[in-house]
Image (spheres, rainbow, N blue to C red):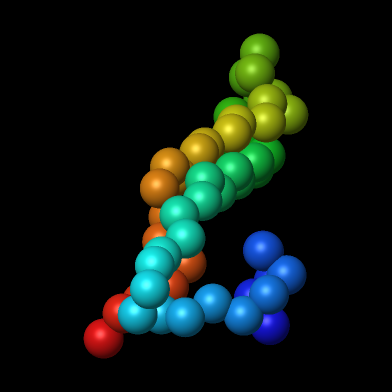
Length: 52
């Protein structure tokens, strides 16, 4: 079972790409005006299947 789409996929017939959003607290800014700032990074076009 493929968790993103909810059904089985055939690795020979296609591929699925999705974006990954990562949010994290900036610890290196402690003691500054920006203390507690949350940064967000998006990785676009992440492949979920590896065809070998």
